[in-house]
Amino acid sequence: MLGPVLLAAARSDNVRRLVSAAPVTRSVVNRFVAGERLDESVAVTTALVDRGLDVTLDHLGEDVTGRAEALRSRDAYLALIDRLAAEHLGARAEVSVKLSAFGQALPGGHDIAYRNVLDVVEAATAVGTTVTLDMEDHTTADSTLAIHADLRGRFPRTGAVVQSYLFRTEKDCLALAGTGSRVRLVKGAYREPASVAHQDKHEVDRSYVRCLRILLAGSGHPMIATHDPRLIRVAQSLAARLGRTPDAYEFQMLYGIREAEQERLAGLGHRVRVYVPYGTDWYGYFMRRLAERPANLAFFARSLVSRG
Image (cartoon, rainbow, N blue to C red; front, side, top):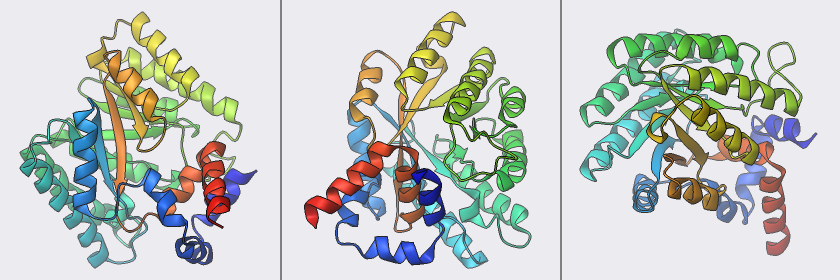
C-alpha cells in the first residue's frame, strides 16, 4: 500500500518541502543521485567506466512550466554532451531525457519537445554517443513514441523506453523490435489507473517476460532494465536460447542499487549500463525510487532513525 502513497507524495509540493528540509535527506539522496552539479556526475561516470560499466546520464527535471525552463533543460544536456566529448566518454556514456523536461506538457508541447530534443540528439550524434527517450506516465506515451519515430528517421540509434505494467506495451514492443532499434524495458514507476495498467506485481512481471521475449526475438538491441534476480536469470536463459551473444543486448540498473550485481554481471562478460541521475530537481526521482522497492524505503527510514 505504501507504493501508491509515495507516488502521490512525489506530486505534492507540501511533502516536497518537508522531505527536502529534513537534514538527513541529502545524505540518503546521495545514494541514488550523483550530485547536483555536472562535475559531480562526470566524476561518478568516470569511476563507473573505470570499473567496466557503461552509463546513461539523466539531468533531473520534469513538469516544466514554461518555454524558458524547457530551454534551460535542453542547454543542460548540451553542456553535458560537450563535457562527455571533452572527457572522451562518448563511447561508454550516453544520455537519457524526459520529454516533460523539454516542454512536452506545455501548450503545443509535442512540437516544443521535439525541437529541443532534436538539438540534443544532433549534438550527441556529433560526439559519438546516443540518446534514449525515457517514458513517463501513460498520457505521454503516444507523443513520446511519435517523437522517437521521427528522430529515428534521421538518427536510427535513438533509444526508446517501454513499461511492462502498461497493457499496450507488448504491442509497442512488436513495433519497436526492428533492425537497429534500442529499446529499454522497465516495469514502470508511475501511479497508473487500472484502466491502462496491471495493478498486480505478478502480472507486471509476467508482462515483463512476454515483452522481453519479443525484444530478444527481434533484430534490435534490447536494454534489460531490472534489479530482479529472477528476471535477470530469465533474460540470460532467453538470450542464450535465442542465440543472442552478450554484445547483442545489455542489462541496465540504477545508480546506487545492487552495485555488487552490476559488477558480477559485467564480470561474466555482460554489458551493464548504470542509469546515473544528477541535478537539483531530484525530489520526484527520489520518491519513485522509494516507492519501487521496500528495501529503499527501509534504508531511508533507518537513516532517519539513526540521525534522529
